[in-house]
Image 1 (tube, rainbow, N blue to C red):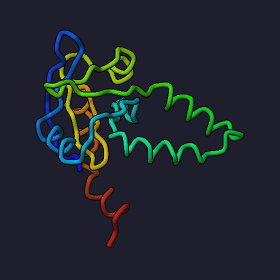
Image 2 (image 1 turned 180 degrees about the vertical axis):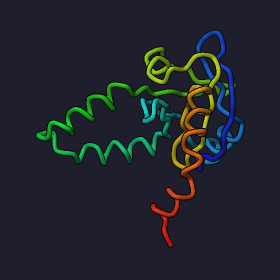
Image 3 (image 1 turned 90 degrees about the vertical axis):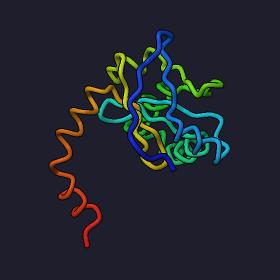
Image 4 (image 1 turned 60 degrees about the vertical axis):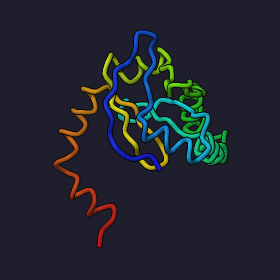
Length: 145
């Protein structure tokens, strides 16, 4: 659903604009609201409301009697913010999430099928430099033949 890599700057009010392709996809799929949260590898995850509800439902199934499940759910849901793009397709990045992801002025928005990832530009470049050499081996292990 969301694909591609787009670079943007944060404006002086702490907002980023969603790429036009992402706005078109959201409009075509009647997506008006997103959930923004701490992701993995120090990026931010952004889910459509429907996708968020699917993930939330899976996480609710984890037993609250398990310490790991409680810890994960606390950390995961406490970092979540509901965001609605304004008329120009901008969303506000909460300070706590910018701090978590080390986001300064330049970001890269990455479409990863059912979610959008938001990366600090330098961190994204570093991730790509470190991960790209193993891409084929990872594909072989995960997908196989």
